[in-house]
Amino acid sequence: MSHILILGGDGYLGWPTAMYFSSRGYQVTVVDNYFRRNSCVELDVGMLYPVPSLQERAKIWSEQTGREIKVVIADLTDPESMRSLFDGRTGYSFALDHSFTGIPDTVMHYAEQPSAPYSLINYKYANITLANNLLVTNNLLFALRDFSRETHIIHIGTMGEYGTPNIDIEEGWLDIEHKGRTDRFLFPRQASSLYHTTKIMDTDLMWFGVRMWDLKVTDLMQGPVYGIETEESVVDDRLKTIFNYDEIFGTIVNRFITQAVVGYPLTVYGQGGQTRGYLNIKDTLQCVHRSEITPAKPGELRIFNQIMETFSANELAEKTRRVGNRLGYDVRIDHLENPRKEAEEHYYNPTYQGLIDIGVEPHFLTDEVMEEMFRVVQQYQSNIRKDVIFKGITW
Image (cartoon, rainbow, N blue to C red; front, side):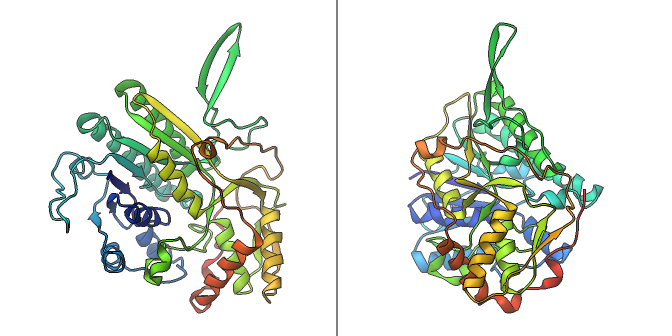
């Protein structure tokens, strides 16, 4: 079976991805430097429940399933750390079954600072975001150029690269006719944070590597993800993914449900008309799997818009209130002065057919799905700190 290397394998999406591929018989190696965990401690933002170390998670997974996930702790902004994953220095020979190969067939690139608010706390955090995200991507591209041009990159981008243009958002590319001539360009990008700006730069870096060195890349423009449990994590509660509910690292659906459970008014920014595309964490796993099964070709930058449905902030708040009230919670909505510079009322019509075409079967944010999330969060209600939910980072 293929060898999958997951960069950022300790994160909200990285660890579920590791279990998902391992459960399907893949050789899985995860790499992380605990950036997310350390940032949560530094910034004093809460996690819903404690999460074992990456090595402990891998041990629990092996005990429960008999399958191995190999763990490497490394800072991939260091080019030599990245290159060691491809030139044989890291070594996979001490895997339990001695079957891990040295060169991965596919690299899942999650290893980035993932928060728009974090990137704009101040200039220091902006610099950390720029340095981390761009150096990791650049180091990966040069490692593949020098050691493994056949390895397929699956990168998690963001729908935030596009902004909110007043035209339909195509899947990564736009055909242009100008003065009687036609050409195909990357769809115009207009980020609303420095984090999203680094993701635009990622796309440009990868497009350079594809054009110059015939690398093969799938770039997934992902919307905000919601969810806690996956098919693999229910094996043992200790295998649940990292779950943040604060404004820095928590995504909106996860935040709203947590706020509802502890009686904290739902924090809707401004008028609440901001519309985005969303997907269940289970669909992230489907999307990366289907992308791995049907890889991009050498010299191809393939782009999919990775969302399954769209909602405004108001629609999500109303859905949270309806489900929460039905479960006995007194859910209130608070429209705060928007701390972000963004359009609150806008046109938003993205195309997102490509992943469906390669076999993804979407989950939707039904009341039943949200109710299941409420029940999980409720189990950890005593851990929730109201003081870390909203700190008012502005830009």
